[in-house]
Image 1 (cartoon, rainbow, N blue to C red):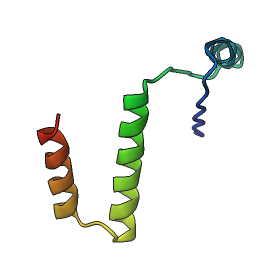
Image 2 (image 1 turned 45 degrees about the horizontal axis):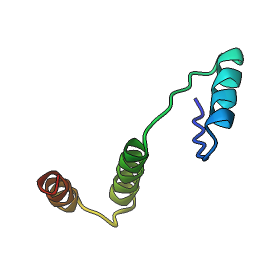
Image 3 (image 1 turned 90 degrees about the vertical axis):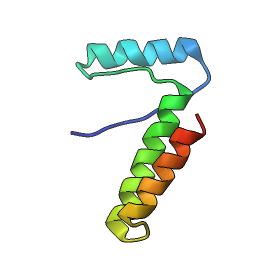
Length: 70
């Protein structure tokens, strides 16, 4: 499965892309800016853990600090 993320400022073009995705039988979903940031954080943490640049304890501390700042 491939995933494509597009970001733009035109609501009409976004609507057009969503319609095209549906016609091509793609699953499409609009997400908020906050959801996009969360996806980026998850991806970065995963990459850090896999590469060894981040250890599990750092991940836990980082996630706790995010929860405390909400």
